[in-house]
Image 1: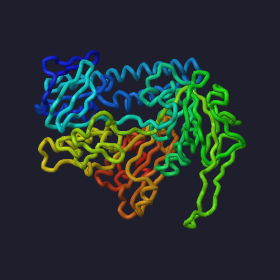
Image 2: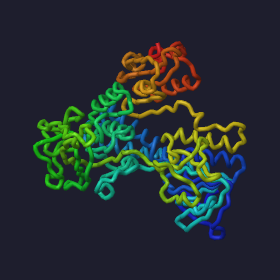
Image 3: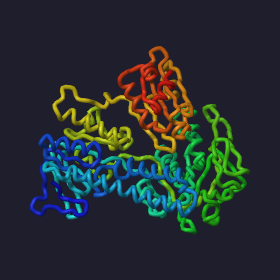
Image 4: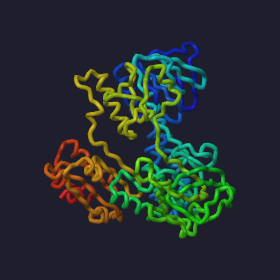
Length: 538
């Protein structure tokens, strides 16, 4: 049952209060799966979703699936040469956006009806906030609806984290990932603030479409949590696609450009040059297809801790007099100011739990220091009979973790003798869908060393895998960490075509405590990428 539809919202005038067994705030993966299960068990369920455009949750509408649809379209454009001219680029991008919208609309409709068509489920479109420990008010287009429920589940996901940069909220052409995936026209130039994996996926995708992409990284090290050899290989592949990097870069201000684009004032630490010039004192719209670094002799040069975007720039690190305690004291590194002009800016600086407006204090629900809903190993909040599932509880931000959160919660509701807990969750894998996908599970070498483990490193170039050669995708490397005396698989990093499929085999072996020799000796079909595990673990 529904009191709202994708195209209209109505509130029953005779009964503004609904009493339910369960209220789920948010239509995400964990929440929608739990709603269907509770309904099948005969429970009366209310699902509150703030937007009709978000039925089904983040993954379906603005996350995993639309981005992967666009990534596949971009790869096809690159293979077909459709990214070679402005006309073909625009046509390929327009077709990709149209297909993305078709897929998301179809999935959103299916997800909506999967719940709303059940007699035990009421879907209400509107923003919910707590009014008490077991009471919520939902603000719909037709007025407020009050809901009381014996059990409440918070599944509101996460929202993009927006840094405090002057002009970032008011300048046209500045987008989060949500907006950038729904443009009608392809930007010829794109600046990405942030070099985490979300930003890199977009960098790879738009580079494949033919956009000139520049990534601004706050610090000096690329992918600092990854092993240096893996990070270097990922960076090399992105640079081969034409992606440019500017390291140690802080965006100081954003404003409209005279040519209708966007101008960024960027400070690059550890660098000096003859003169630094404010953005408002230089002409906009100059430069080539890449973002223009005003005053630079090479506007597209990749920068690193040992290089910079101008031939005459120098690095400096000035030591000053000793401090009062006798230890050396260093001045702030010198910096150069640059003005970048671009058509669009993507803000990819992470995501933060979406708790704004929930009035959690009214229910006694506390937050962590990082702003997530505080939960225990059973995902129970600090209030009785209120749970939090998915990104909002501060766990790994993956839709499959939200699904596993559902398992944690359901194991408590179905009478299990021993509920499944977050601590029972093993070896969470991840995949980043670059032109060559990067997938990993478990510890990398950096982490194994920090933990003091005795390990051996296994390496295999993807060029040695027959199927990769057949697919004409020989780029990348495979790396695994194995405990020396036990043969236990500690982790694996796969920068390879189809790595997002193969990594699940490694995870399964780790979950089963199978030694590396199991994958070394396993009989795989041929030719496949999976059979590379025979050689990787040899």
